[in-house]
Length: 187
Image (cartoon, rainbow, N blue to C red):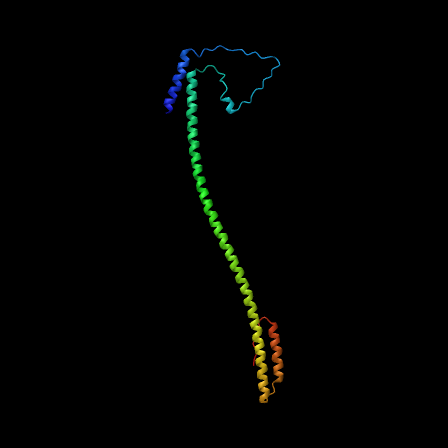
């Protein structure tokens, strides 16, 4: 394809050379004295459209140079296209991974929320259980005191005299209720 294209360009330029189109006369342009022309800034794009100041190149050489530039640009285009396709593939892969990661993050956030709710429920149940245990402990103390009082009454009915011991047992029971770790009471 490139060789055919180069051959066509070279043959057209050779036809112009041999037909006499290469001998041109110089044209002189006269401008009024008050005309100020601004020189455009030469950029890469502008340079390629400017005429070559060197007249020692033949049209055939120019055609060969242009075909070489065209071949070089075609190769760069092919490389750029391949690089673009590669980047598109990587972008698609990253987009897929991002979607999967977002789904996993959403699932993890959901599970974390459920875990937090469960922990809060367990904490409330633990506070309730603690209150129940403390209440039960107080009930047990009250039951022990009631049992001691009942035993005291039984002893008094039977003719015993442990009245002073009951007062000391009640004092010990009161001290136990204020302590975190109460000592067991003796009957």
